[in-house]
Length: 71
Image (cartoon, rainbow, N blue to C red; front, side, top):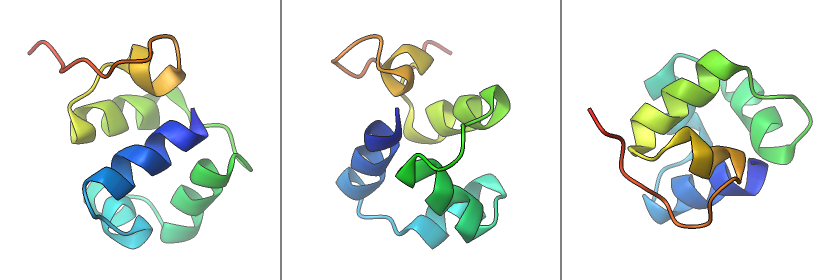
């Protein structure tokens, strides 16, 4: 899960600080999620899925191809 959110961020040329600010987190908290030092709560995982427009299944590592969210 942690490498997925890093890869999604890097693919969009965003910094950790930009993503953290965009979803309402402290930068250090987001950094800990990316490094796997802290579990990502479900509500934050949902925010990240919406932010990157991918399914929770992709973020959780259950599927290997990112699917767009059905809205």
